[in-house]
Structures are given as structure tokens and as C-alpha cells.
Length: 359
Ligand code: KG4
Ligand code: ZN
View (tube, rainbow, N blue to C red):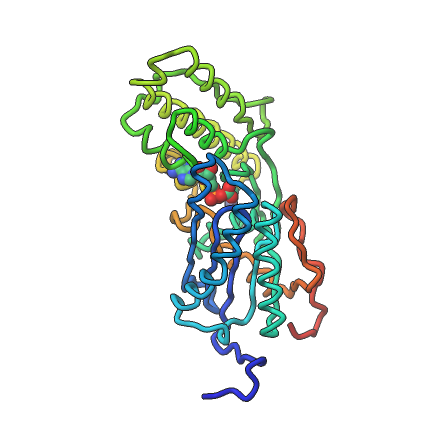
């Protein structure tokens, strides 16, 4: 059926388009009216590997190159067109400002051209909500550990629209420590997954690396000390650099996991949450998943760790978190800007829909 005015789509399928460009992953996802994921396409920018870190300028240019084709692929995979899209959700921060701007400006252009409502979403809120996307039976209160390359946060979610940060890293993020130790071991960048593979078969008790707990009862983390301890170990011990490097990887991984599990359980007890969830790129780590599984089953706690494609940066979690806010009536307007330091819990959206207003 032809429509008389192409600028007035009928949104008959009520789909949500999600866009994520906060760092070095270009992602677009399409969610159905009931929040089920129809497609979640992630184009990883491998080019940063050779620099052993993300180069912001290159990341922005790659997003410019990749975003529109990624959106097209996500729509095709969902067997949808822009006419079926009812709203667009985009990561507005935190992240690299140039990268974020590509997603935000593309979204604004799309929304303006198509007459669509849109919403700026906090990237970390996407990670926090990813376990709810994974498991529809998960209901608050939940204690969520977010472990990624840029952040390590303990978050209490007492009700779905309230996010309370109760602990955070005071220096390096857990993923950052994985990445830096992986580079020291010659495993390349980003090295979290490579370090996990390298640790397989290694003795995790071979080296006594520090488990930094900070003050008694503190829910904060610190991972810079363990990273330095590994550096010193590698400088002093020739075998640690060669035939015992798998033991170094296993010992490092197990020290980081011990602290993550311990602090998460401490927070869970403090807030009496009956469920724990783990999110973010480091949640892809098999040893971490197993450690949480055994701790939670021993304590009869519900545990949700999303599938790998929802752990790393992805647009499905952004569409999901944004849709929840859209359903509460929130909207962004064209003044929406990228905010590289956007704190979790604040609203990137300047416009809140007034009662009774459409879109
Ligand atoms: O959430 P994410 O994709 O991006 C950020 O928002 O930072 O997380 C990326 C981080 C990187 O530090 C990467 O090395 C780490 O997650 N990572 C892992 C594993 N897979 C990815 N760390 C440990 N074990 C893994 N299997
Ligand atoms: Zn992330």
C-alpha cells in the first residue's frame, strides 16, 4: 500500500531503533513493540589493535563510515524499514565525545527527517538494564555489578526506574586492568578475552597478587595496585615473562575475580537484594561467570549474566533502557548533546513530555 505522505510513517510495527557509538563499537539494534530483540548488529573497529588502545579521532571517523550501513543491516535483519520504527534511542554519554557525537547527530537527523521521537540514553544505564533484557523474569530489587573497559560500578536497583551507585573503582576499571596486563604479557589489545584464553591451563595460585579491599566495608574497588604488581613481577622474574606467563595470567584473573565477587556479595547483603546481575564487557569472562554461579547458588540467590552479545557494548541494551524511559513519557529534543562525562542516574534528556502531549 502506498502512503500519500512519506514523512508521516504509520509506525504500525512500533519498533524501537537503538544506536550506540560511545567508544569503538558501532552498533544498531531493532527491538519489537514487546522489547524482544529483532536484531543487534555490532561492528567492532579492529583498527585500534595496532595502537594498543582506542584512538579517539580514528574511532569517530570509523563511526561516520560504519553507522549508516550498520543501521541498514539492523533494519534488514529485523525485516523492517524506517517506516516501521516508532522511536530512536541513542547513547548520549558517557564515552568519547567525537564518537558520541556521530550517534547523537545521526539520530537527530533521522528523527527530524522522519518525524520520530528520540531519546538520549546513558550508556551505563544500558549496561545496568542488559540483565533485564536478557531475562524478563528478573525483577528489582537487584544488585548489579557493571564491569567494563571504562567502568567498574556496583549499582543497587530497588525499583526499575531508580539506579543507585553504591560502589565504584577509585582508579582503573577492571577491564582496563585486563587490557593493560594483556599488553604486558604480549597478548595484544583489547586483551581481556585473550588473557582469559591464555590463563586456561595456568595455575591461579602460582603468584600471590594483591587483592585490594580498601577500607573495611567499603564497596569501592581499586585495580591499579594489581596492575603494578604484575609489572614488577614481570620485570623481576624472567620465567614469569616466558614459560610461566600462563600462571601470571591465571593468578591475575583470579585475584580480580575474587575482589569483584566479594564486594558484590557484600553489597547484596547490605541491601538485602534477592538477585545479583553482572553486566559489561568483562562479564563475558568464563571464570568470572563460573565464580558468580557457584557463589550465588550456594546462597540461593538469583543470578543473571546476559549472553555475550549483550555484555559488550551493543545497541540492544540502549534501545531497551531507552524504551523504558520513553514509555514513562520522556523525550529528548534537538538540543540533546553528547556528554562525555554523563553521570549514571542523571537524565541526558532536557525535554520531558508534558502530560497529554503526543510524542
Ligand atoms: O563494555 P565494553 O564492551 O566496553 C566498555 O564500555 O568499556 O567492555 C570492554 C572491556 C575491555 O576491557 C575488554 O578487554 C573486556 O571488556 N573483556 C574481557 C573479556 N571480554 C571482553 N575481560 C575479561 N575477560 C573477557 N573474556
Ligand atoms: Zn560499555
